Image 1 (cartoon, rainbow, N blue to C red):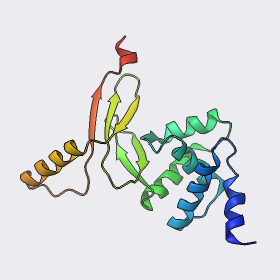
Image 2: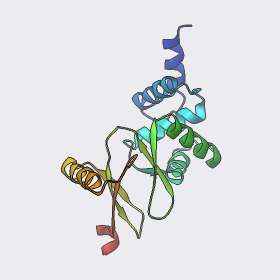
Image 3: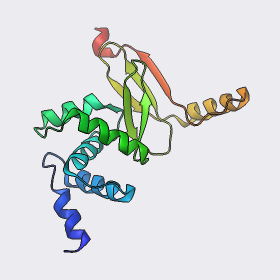
Image 4: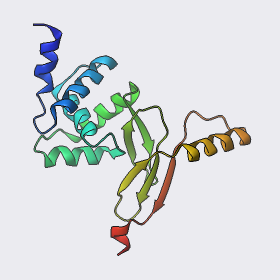
Length: 159
């Protein structure tokens, strides 16, 4: 069997996901040199099905449970940690101290977080990022990375 048919067979493993999400997740795992286990495939493909947005371990766990493809919490934790080590995802700490993950796209997304319900949304504003980079340079701060988190109350919670 050639590797292409093996990829196609594995890509069908997580039935609740779009084939493209499964296939892309499998390709990412192989590119990173990680074994494409069913659990890793389900976790990463589920992450991509949320558009690679800012997700916690608990968010992924709940999504998998809701879709009737349970993966143990510890497996999700280990998988996301490995994905971050391999550069597939980026781990970020949120104000509540929980680690959240997002696709490593090379850019620095900003986040708006509701501190009542925890709803998060990501956005890119290159002018804002450029201003931050300039300020960091002006202060002479040596940084590896930075992110912006705006915290407040969403419309649903404000009612």
